[in-house]
Length: 108
Image (cartoon, rainbow, N blue to C red; front, side):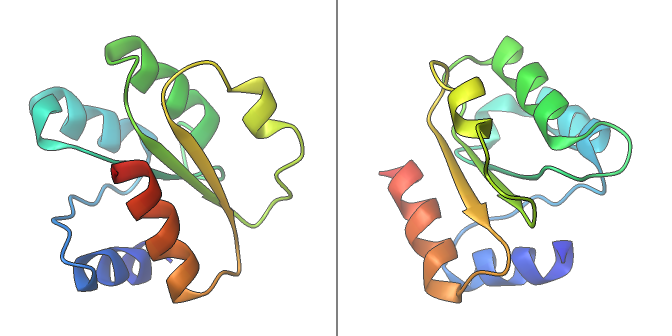
């Protein structure tokens, strides 16, 4: 799924840095924090999951924009993680247009 999302985001004209898991993503962020306008996380990532990665990102930059993608129901995820940086949730499976709208909404 990671390769597909990366290709789709690139097709929107976005520059994408891809990471294999939450820890690798945090390391990429720490290496160049000003190089990221939007972070896309899956809740079920190996190692550091999406919720834990989100918490760490917000410690580093409270205003970070994050799009969470998951096949799990949203439940109260947005409620539990509200009050911080801009946050959106996209449920899998989704349509190409849904991903673009969610990303653009966070970037605008």
